[in-house]
Structures are given as structure tokens and as C-alpha cells.
Image 1 (cartoon, rainbow, N blue to C red):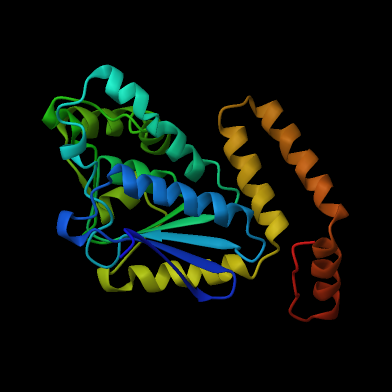
Image 2: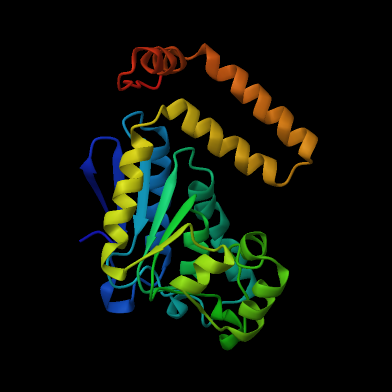
Length: 256
């Protein structure tokens, strides 16, 4: 069986489920390659409007598979070029929702932070415990985490290896929502269904501008926003959305 399972529960929605239950969904190279291939394909698929990334109802991903790297040299690690696989996820133009139950540790926490929305279970566990095995995060843990929760919370997590529960992650700004453990997958699907009903061109432009503007000046970010705003007036979906508003009916968006 594939270690990453693609399912399509409803039109417009793709679900990617990491499936290595015997090792708590540890991220080996095979899983990373399969995720990259899926995100590349779904990013180009006009029928896909939202992607849910999950490890299932028990664990999201408990970190990197240390068996692959314990004896590696610096040159071995360099030649792996793993960052290119992560870029397929961070560069995906479609909205991505991470549905997090259980452990999201190390690479698992970094993977969740590649999403646009994180739905966490109350007893989920977000952490960067790499320091406990003599290393540090290498896929965005020092950078994305700091941008999400600030220097002081990030330093505490990174220097101690202590995790945050789902509730603590939400309070710190590391999760979009926290729900009962048994409702994580359901809530992620509800949000995906809502996003999939929206005009896809507007959704992809919102994501692109927001991410690009994070590392730009305010003036540059506002310029990018204006350009994208103006561009959407060339779409059929803009005409349909406003006409439906005037006619008090549900719009039908085609992504054109």
C-alpha cells in the first residue's frame, strides 16, 4: 500500500493521508517524494480547489525517520536535497488545510506549518524536539515557527523540545482552530467544502499575495494586493459572483 493515500471525498476536495502507522507516520524520503508528487499534480489540477493534509485520526507525523539519517555525513545530507521536496508543498497554489490529530513533532510540525490553515485536536502535540537528539530543525522550524508564534514562544519550544497541546497551539497562534479530537477530520472537511465553493482564482490569488507579502514591505505588499484585486475583474467568476449577489442566488464558480 502507498505510504501517502490520495482520496477525493467530494468534488473539488483532495485528501492526502500519510499512512505509516507502524512508525507513527515518520517522514522518510519515500513519504516526502510521494507528498511532493501529489502536491505538484494537485496544484496543476483544475478540478482540485482545496487539499486536506492529514495523518489520520491518531497521529499526524511524529517527525523525521531517524533511521535514514543517524549515520549521515554533512555531504550526505546536502546531496539529499530534501528542501526541493518541501518546496512542492510550500509552492502549491491551492489552499491547504492540515488536519492534526496526535503528534506533529519535528518534521511533522514543520509539515503542518506548510499548510494555510491548521485544524488541531485538543490533545494534539506540536513540537520541535530536534535538540534532544543533538540537532536542530532543518525544514523551517526556526523560521516558520517564529513567524507564527513570535520569538519568545519559539525559543522556548526550540531550546527545550517541549511541545504545545492543541489548545496551547491555538492560543499561541500555531493553529487556526482547535476542536475535539474526534471532530478534527470532520471540521477540516467542512472548511475544505466551504473553500471549494468559492471562486478558485480568487482563492489562489489571496494565497499568493498573502504569502508574498509576508516578507515584503507594507507598500510592496499593498501594491501586490492591488494588482491581484484588479486582475480578478478580468474573470468570469467576478461577473458571476456579483450578478448572483444582485439576483440573490447561489453563485456557480468555474475558475474562469
